[in-house]
Image (cartoon, rainbow, N blue to C red):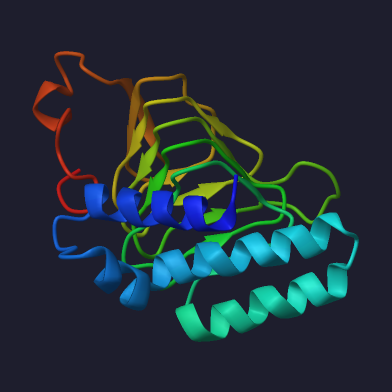
Length: 189
């Protein structure tokens, strides 16, 4: 997809996800989460070209300016949005599907120093609340919500709600979660 079209898609995603966004120009100019994603894309391309040191330098420059650290080896889908970006960390072997949203302070981290897959996989349309940590090679199924400050260390099927330390997995839309189904995970869950 052409760079300009992808940038327009990112801006449209931010405007759709953030009710405080007043214009596309404002989003383009001031949204550090988007700046981090744009910087990540360049670093990821360098990583794919096997210019790994240059990719890491690029990602650290982006981290310095945005407060968001995305390893250039991570794989991120389309329409990814980081709201209020500061403090987000995305590890090297993380995989993020399409239409995923992270709030500030989220960590997609590892639990070991082993090689191979050691970071989380998030399915399509997953929302991760403020300060949540998803640790290790766990998979969060599509259309799931991870609540604020949750610590996730095990897999969750699609359409789940994960809350607590360690996170408890409940099906989304069940009697126990009906009140939470449409809540903003950055604030209420």
